[in-house]
Length: 439
Ligand SMILES: [Zn+2]
Image 1 (cartoon, rainbow, N blue to C red):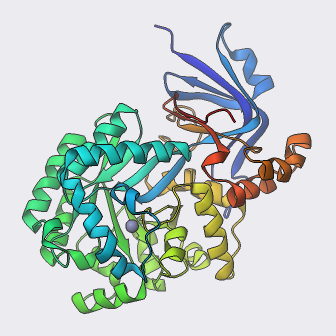
Image 2: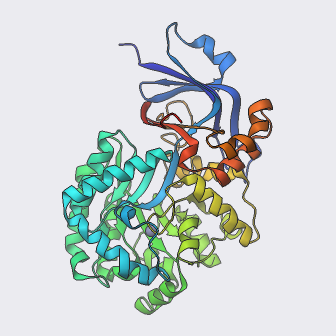
Image 3: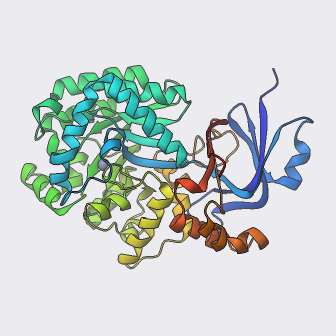
């Protein structure tokens, strides 16, 4: 049977390396063509040279004037917190008590979980996010609901059941053994089924006993290609609490390291209050940081130190952390990341921010070649960005529209002024999964 071939014409951008460490990191074609065969990238390049290779009759979707790029990857987000986004609280710990725990309680009900999962996925796709690392709740049925919904849409998603056996309300508490048993059953049910990938998910060190963390580490060794996700060093009160609970640990990240939870495919949310030893250990172990600027500013947690992370050679990615984060949009996440970097005396070029939200995330997850860029054979998850999505964007981006000037300026304006409105269309595995209504 002949492959299902589709082609997309527009300005085309993707990355081969980190712009912070390579002068040749991105590929850009002002008049480009993306060729997709059976849901995978067959070729990406100049329209003029590639068009001639298409068999007669191949449909060519015309996105001229718009920017085609890989779908965004959000490496840390809580789908059950969708309904409590933008809830006021004076810091992380009161916010958890007042809003998070009561909201997560509702996911005991599979119908509620399914309904929130559908809205959450709609919102991700509207924002151009095609892959996310997703926290469910302590209830296994919240994972089933999420993966059922993402499977139906053909999305590459990573998710896991929260492990939490202390320092939380009774109604959200599992046990060390019960949580491990549920996790193993979910790994067997969902990991690598279609595009689903499982993440072992202790919420954070304070809500797990030593025994639970040890069992999570054992699962991580038994299933080395699963993911691990948790929070570390988000806010000062939390760090002091961890120090009280684990007095033997050298540092917060050492609590995880000592049980085998620092390894490739482990994703650590926040990573603000780390020291040099912590950063070096993360880089050596292959663990990665999910940087959550809208959340860190919203909860007043602190400012991520990009320069220190780069000196240590840590793997970095950007994340929304909804509902602590205040936007699903990775463009808005870049906007805040840029300001966080400025406040720490660093500078984040737009090219680097777009890298961090695509290939940088894929590399952090050890999924390069699968998602994150237009390498031949990669899954065709891509988005169409509209530089003229709003009157202000159209005016700001006139120079690019008229003369193709400065890609960096175009990307910077999209990051600072853009949000879900800048996403004209989203494709997953070559299938259209979101199309912005005409305006
Ligand atoms: Zn979080």
